[in-house]
Length: 270
Ligand code: IPD
Ligand code: CA
Ligand code: CA
Image (tube, rainbow, N blue to C red; front, side, top):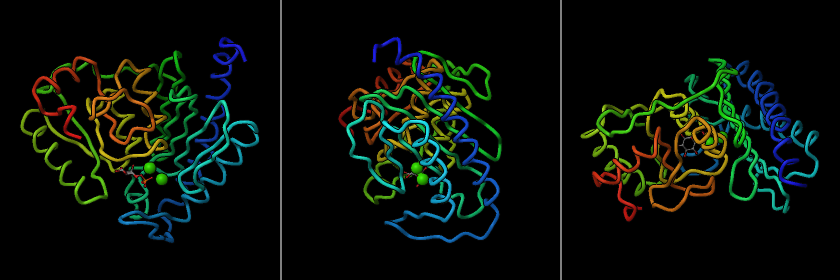
């Protein structure tokens, strides 16, 4: 496919991704306050019946619409097909919240070509927040253009994070948050990586970082930040892709420079 034909496809892919996220979101919303069946699938890591039910809907819709694309989804696992377009799906991001009837969770769906997300949707079904972006096409929240805060200095910034499950990384995160709390404005955390990153895109926070997340946690929201005028980078200093474990989402490139210059986050730390 020629480049311009691919670009023309983004709006169709985005439309399908938005409709799919909304359909799965309706199911997640309707089962939110029900008793849940919770299964421990790993250390500090759970899955509920609703993660699996929402994933079933999403996989079915994406497979119907894009039979020649690959789809990797958190619960269904990695798709090893070599396809031009690879979808990354998190049917419920924030399962620990969802399982406890805490209202902070979302559905995240992204299409990635090589290492660049080209379509991204993050849907918060309780608030009805639909964050969406396509590569080069801008970012929106419920159809309205989205911009980051434009904050450039750590001292003015509201930062956010989630705590890794691994005990050593959790302590490392604690040290970072201690340093940022000393120098930044304040800290917020939601318990959903995708929602936290989308909030940077919306200008509701200015920095988000993590030490160990997956492509389905960050591909969609990372694109939304990029298209809202923000920047995605990594704590280790390598260029961001959805496959890096240690993303940092920022309102502006200048804020990353300020973080680095103050030594709060050094590229050699990770
Ligand atoms: C988790 C959440 C959490 C983050 C974890 C993720 P899940 O995803 O995004 O905020 O700290 O690393 O695995 O399990 O709720 O989909
Ligand atoms: Ca997740
Ligand atoms: Ca999940």
